[in-house]
Amino acid sequence: MERVPILEIGGVLLVSIQIDLQDQTVLALQEDLADRISASGAHGVVIDISGVEIVDSFIGRMFATIASLSRLFDATTVVVGMRPAVAITLVELGLTLGDVRTALNLERGLKILGDLRRGSR
Image 1 (cartoon, helix red, strand yellow):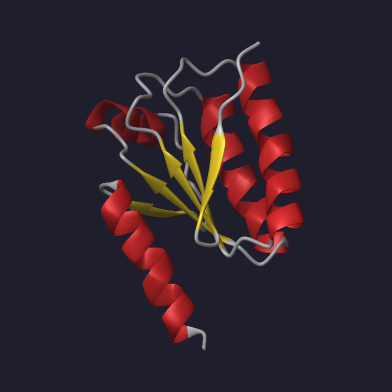
Image 2: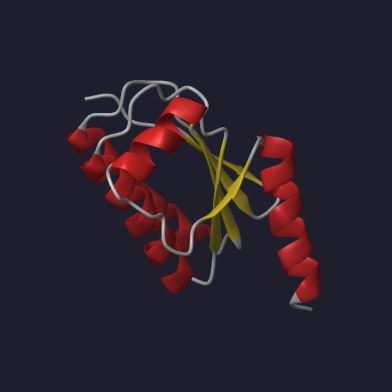
């Protein structure tokens, strides 16, 4: 099973998904992220899904679960790079991402996290 790499940049964990997501991969990512947020004290998580072609209901729910886990560790999650076809699929499946923030690209996602961080001081 492939693992999704998690990079840390200035208190933000960056997850760039460039592989086809299988259920086990997403479950491992959830655990890895929880461990990394806890260990690093990161204030934000950016999940770049620009390389994701297909999202099913399980994977969509896992993004919301990851955001909930992040919130428990006082981190904000932003999903970036969602393709139109993925957004349409999520709507057709009746899935919402809950409190997950979204942005068109990585730059905008990092700006959201920076703005939130400055606003909380």
